[in-house]
Length: 161
Image (tube, rainbow, N blue to C red):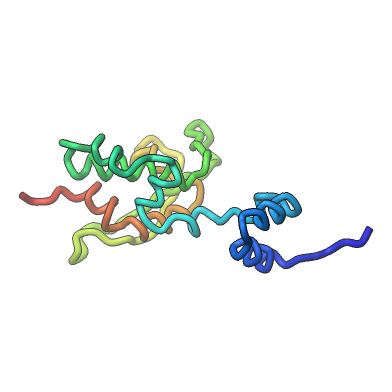
C-alpha cells in the first residue's frame, strides 16, 4: 500500500472549503482531531465563551440580574477559566503543579492594565481565587489581555456611582 502525506495546513484549508459531505469524508480519513482549532483560535469574545459552553446569552445575563458588576465579572471569569482549561482542574495538593493567573498592575491611567502572567508558588497565602487558575501561562496571558476591560477590570475595581 502506498502512503499519502498531506500538509495539515492544506488539510484544514480543504476542510474549511468543503461541503458537509466533503468535511465528513476528510474527518473519516484523517480523524476529527486534525480539524479542531485551538481554544485561542475559537475564542475572541465573551459571546464565543457562552456559545462554546452552550449557554444562551440572554439566560446568562438574566441569571446575573441584580448583581453588582464585580459579581457578574466573577461569573464571567470563572466561565473563561473553565473553558480555557478544557477539563483541566488544578490539583491544590500537588505543589509541583504550576497554576497560572492573569495578573494586573493597578493604578495605570485606565485603572487597570495587564502586567504579566503569574504562577502560584507553594505557600500558605492566596493572591487570587483558585477557580481562576489556568493550566498554562500562555492561556493566562491570552485571557488576561482579551478580557482585561470587559471582565478583569470590573472584577477588581468598584465603579464610582
